[in-house]
Length: 224
Ligand code: C5P
Image (cartoon, rainbow, N blue to C red; front, side, top):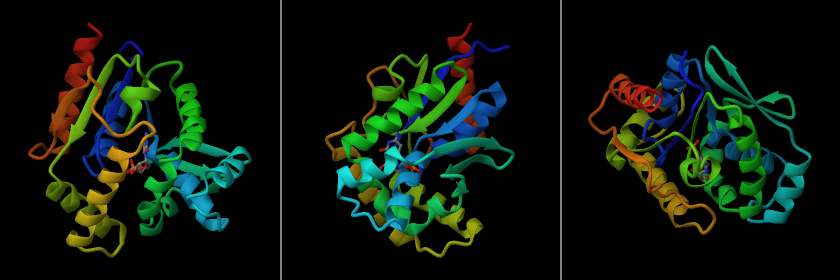
């Protein structure tokens, strides 16, 4: 059996992180942890509770009495907020367009990062996000920074949305992705940035399977 290493995958929105991370985790019999889902869960509850999303203190107060649970399932990782299955709800346009504002709060990050580190403590994880290699799992054995052109990422999101029955246009998706990348890269608290010891993987011209195979090959090399 494969040594239970930690694999960190970071990159901008729509680079294919979650799809590819899921496949890699399954192939290695590791746990897949989607950290973006946690920031989305906080955003979702904040909106529902009518909390001003720029109010970091109010959000923290809410989060301290919130239970966020990630559960692996056949359909991928399920997300529960206080026992409610919000796996679909956290993908709405409203959550997507507000999540970067919530994720910019250092106090919110601190709480979620502690949860993420606990989830990864025993190894055997593939974790994806924005700051996994630089902050959450600094000691991860394998670090990947995954990207693709913004056009390609918008195109993938579009196809994804069609499949999920969400209405959108390529143009609006490209704008939303570019704005989210800007907010995530320019924020003060743990911005999106490639770690020095991360390997860059451009998925623009790679199929899902090719990208997954590339990471699996690297993982095997790391554990030889
Ligand atoms: O990965 P996903 O697109 O679902 O992430 C949603 C948002 O959550 C990102 O745009 C970013 O603002 C935030 N995020 C973060 N740090 C992470 C994962 C996600 O700031 N580790």
